[in-house]
Each structure stands twice: as C-alpha cells, then as structure tokens.
Image 1 (cartoon, rainbow, N blue to C red):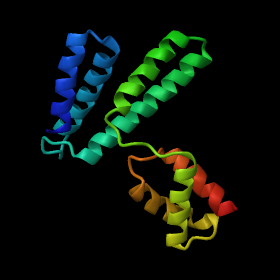
Image 2: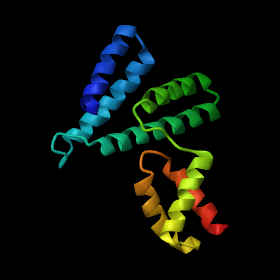
Image 3: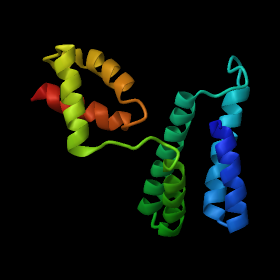
Length: 150
C-alpha cells in the first residue's frame, strides 16, 4: 500500500470519527503528496523518501507557526498546530535526539576523519544521508559544529 493510499484510508477513518484536526492534517499531507506526484518529472509517483521529506517540511512549518502563535499570545492556535504535528509525526520514522543523536554524529565525524570546523561540509553531507528522516537538519548541524569545535 502506497503512502497516498494509506493517507486516503486514514482520511476516511478520521471522517467517520469526526476528528477535525486529524482530518485537516491528513488532507494537507495528501494535497502535498498529490502535488509532488503531478509535478514535472515525478512520473505520477512519490517515493517513500520524497514523502518523508515533504512531511518533515510540513512539521517544520507547523512548529514555526506554533512558535509565532505562542509569541503573539494565541495559545489556542498553537495547540491546533501542535495537534497537527502529532498526526503528521505518525507517518514519519522514529526521530532520534539527545545522546543517541550525538553518538551517531560523533561516529560519522570519526568515520569521515574530519578534525576541524573547515570540514563541516563533508561531515554534513555524510550525516544528512545517514540520518535522513531520523533527525532535524538544524539539530544535526548544531551538533556537528559543537563536536568539531571541541
């Protein structure tokens, strides 16, 4: 079952349950996936990796919006954004953070042989490939900087 088919089935379930937040988030995911599949050169299909990248982008957009809403004192709107993040996160791979992520990044740095901040690009290239979909790019970059400066 493709990602779009899974989302479509889950939309039906959300409709039956009258879950407006999940329905809105799922319709948003489906819209983005359909747009990507009909884009020039896509061939009518969205790969699993492309789908993950699209959903990660959606999560980031909602996190940014929630931060702005909180900053402006609109906690009610921020709650909606956070609820949509929870729905979208169900379709993403398990995220790694903290000590586990630091351990992974340290191993990548050791494997690359980098020993200064000048080699950050080389490390980021390897880390982005290896940790694609599992961690936030900004988090990875911050850890690489920290570990190369240490």
